[in-house]
Image (cartoon, rainbow, N blue to C red; front, top):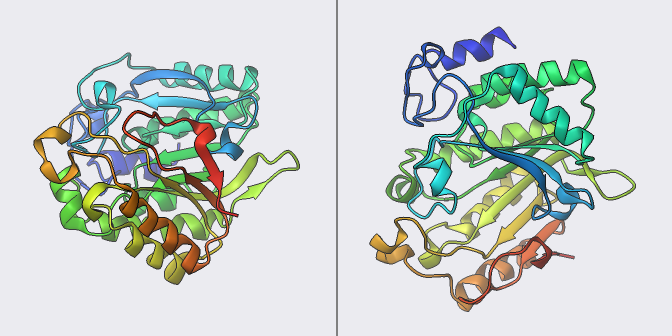
Length: 303
């Protein structure tokens, strides 16, 4: 493990909260995670973007706890409210190797920020033993810039959210101060490292950046402003994954602004802007009614 990564964990500055907790000693900070990575599940997953899932699945490892406290979290049962098995570094490496043996196209680290220093140690072990598939860093977009810089040369594919264009909304609904400014900073750094998504001859992602944009009701996400930022400050060639799947869950019912699904006009406003700004790479999820569930196959190319 890079010594600088260990230093970022104690006092903890892995995420943008920079709560300064001594994680190496087992103390818990804003994310409530301990010193060892806790895993909810690991398996081939077929519901990611097509170049990640391919035909053999994306090797997802879902980590527990989270550095964001989203009121509408669909994974709240393990990200907010549950403690799962904590793993030694070698055991985490073994799970990565198992996913590789199952034929997964990549190792997809879901919500890895608060365990990044341990994950990199596990990756080093797995890579030494035989792991040779791309590493996907699947994040909510609230990592510290220092952490992302240290992942240069380690992560192959960044799969990042830009959830909000205004930090006051991020603070209100995800307890994430300065989210908008931070997510833009780290997205630029991710793109500097990995660039436009590159696919192999079978259409499987090998390196690059995918930005997920979840449309929230009442323009809480400010998705149009985020699209303008991406075109101006990153690249109109970046791969987007525009998602309409939001449904009010967890504590959303207590917040009238987000206690409903998006409507057709909110959806159309974003899709029209994608086309107007000339984005040509990625996927747009079809509009979903209250009686439909999100399926990976409902994502379709923008062109």
